[in-house]
Length: 218
Ligand code: ADP
Image 1 (spheres, rainbow, N blue to C red):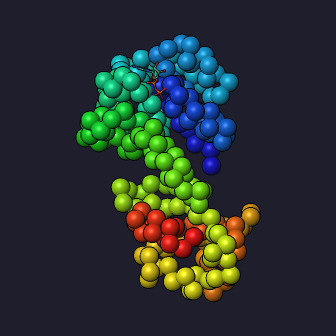
Image 2: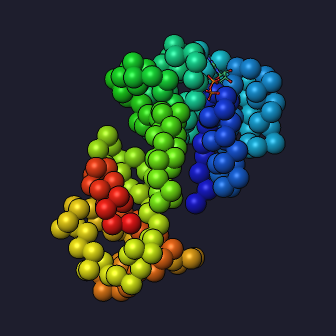
C-alpha cells in the first residue's frame, strides 16, 4: 500500500531514508532548511520544501497535519530536533520517528512523545561488530540489550542432522524460527527434516545462548 511520509533533515540518514521510501513507491515530502540539500533530493522525492521546522507556523503552513508519518532526521542540532518533534506531537501527528544523537537526546525525545527513536550509527556499529567477529553470522537484528535474531550459516558439522537431533531449545534455550534454502524460506521448519550445509538458520534468543550455539555446534 502506498503511504505518505514527510522527512525532515536531509543529512546522510534522512536522504537515504528518502531515496529508499521513494524507490519503494511511497509518496515522500523531503524537507530541510538548507536549499542545497533540498535540491539534491528533488529526483528522489515526490515534493520538496525549504523550511525551518523549529517554527511551528511553518509546519502548519505546509499542511504537515495531513501526514500520518513524519521522520525527523536532524542530527547535529539537537535543539532543532527536539523543538521540531515537540511541534509535531502538539499538532497530533500520529507517528513521529526520530533519529537520536545520544542517550540524553533519546530521553528527551521519549518524554515529549516521539513514537520511535533510532540510533542508526550505534545499531549499525553493533551489527557490523557481529559480522566481523563471526563468519557464520549472515544477518543480525538487535531486539534488546540481551536478545537478538540472527541468521546463521549451517556448516558441515550439522549437515545430515535434524532440529530434533540438535535439541537446540533444551540445550541452548534458543529457537529456530525459519530455515532458508536458496530462494525458499520455511517459517514452520519440520524438526525431523535433515539440514544441509549452506542452509540458513534464522534463530531468536539470548545473545549469550546464540553465541554458545554458534561456537559449540556450528
Ligand atoms: P546526518 O548525521 O544524518 O548526516 P546531519 O545532522 O548532518 O545528519 O543532517 C541533518 C540535516 O538536518 C541537515 O541537512 C540540516 O540542514 C537539517 N536541519 C538542521 N536543522 C534544521 C531545521 N531547523 N529545519 C530543517 N532542517 C534542519
